[in-house]
Length: 251
Ligand SMILES: [Fe+2]
Ligand SMILES: [Fe+2]
Image (cartoon, rainbow, N blue to C red; front, side):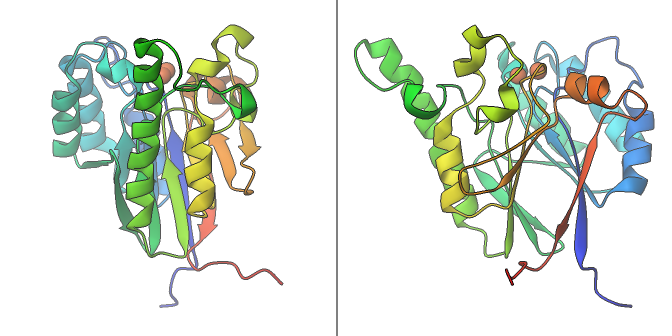
């Protein structure tokens, strides 16, 4: 049999599984198992960060998903202080949870981290002034360093970044301007470009924009479920992107 030349990557974020979400994702997981080779779950997997919410989601994954899944947590998954338990529940259901770590699927590398806010471009928040501002910026830098550690381990020609927060402003456009700085950080973009990622997936900006590009030309997809539902009302809410397994040589 000829070797596979492309990998079909499905991605969705912001499932926000609730205690009433019993069976809510089973059909989507069954369908995506036919449409893709791997599924990325880009954070806000639960609504209030409750273990019970993660258990309901895990049940749908166990019963219906037939392809490998990789995930990162989102800010909602931290709300109840049960993030470690959520990671364990999802790991036990077969999801490879990434937090400054990386993995390979069929020769394509994936590095994942939640990320954090701080804003974009020249207006990004700097570590200056009050201690609490420095803490905030420190958290952004820590997440960027974790992404760097994850990507640095990959030797694959194709590197994909899996995030919850956005690395660029373009894919959060559509959100109220007052909250844009809380939806992502340029510091993530710097790492994505330094390690020559070809594709980035993120969520978090439910009212953002579907696609954008980093300065280094990585394709960025906002796969927040509410956004996908509005953009593609006749489809199940996940995005499939096909990437070549080998690096494409520019001609
Ligand atoms: Fe969300
Ligand atoms: Fe979020």
